[in-house]
Length: 136
Image 1 (tube, helix red, strand yellow):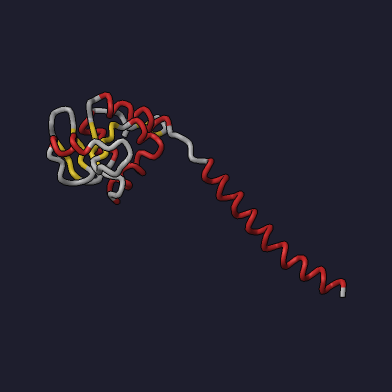
Image 2 (cartoon, helix red, strand yellow):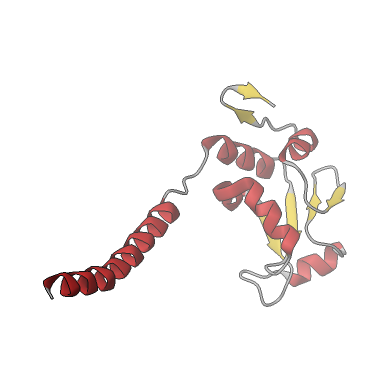
């Protein structure tokens, strides 16, 4: 009888313990996202070169582009083109004739549509993308 009660108790509470452990681990992982100083400096340099990116909150490729910068995307001059987006500036996008997302606009007036690898952005802006002391 004691064995049966123990088995029932263990089975019932192990599930709760497992769920709590998984939730704790997920919260731990979420808190581990830290900014990378290399990308921070790169993003700040890109913005200082009068480079902008036009996009929308619902655009899949815009999300891909943001993920390449990770947390450093906060330093990029991003213009939200959808009126329903946060800090939307659709009038700027219309005035500039933006037709595809994302669209990068560089200080020389040139534009590139679509996701750009960070190395290509570095080439266009003359900003250094460094990784562990090695300039890419």
